[in-house]
Image 1: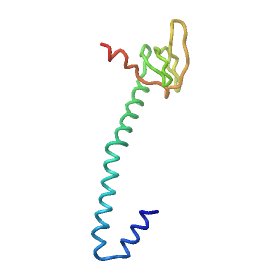
Image 2: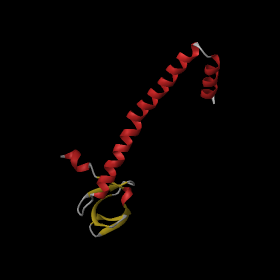
Image 3: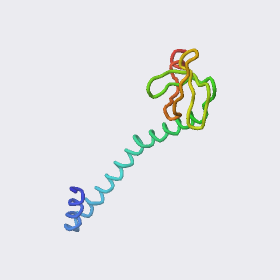
Image 4: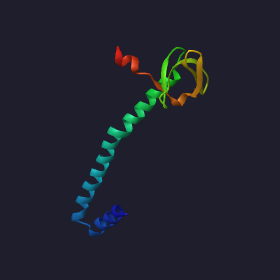
Length: 108
C-alpha cells in the first residue's frame, strides 16, 4: 500500500520527481535480480539435482529418508522404493522422501 501511495505521489509531483521515480524502479528491479540469483536459482538447481538422483536410483544405493532412516535400496517402483534398514527388515517409502547418503563420501 505504501509503495502504491509513494508511486502515485511521485507521479503527481511530475517534473523533478520523474528522475527519482526511475531510479526507484531500477533499484527495485536490481533487488529482485539479486534475490533471484542468490535465493531462487540455487533452490531450483538443488531441486533438479534431487529429481535426477531419484530418477537414477538403482538397487544397492545407500539412501537416507527425510525422517533420518538409513537404508539400502532393494526394489524400485514407480512412486515408491523398498529400502532395507536392517538385515531382513525392509520398509516401503515414497521416492520424494529419499535423499542421498553422504556419510560414506565424507568419511573416505
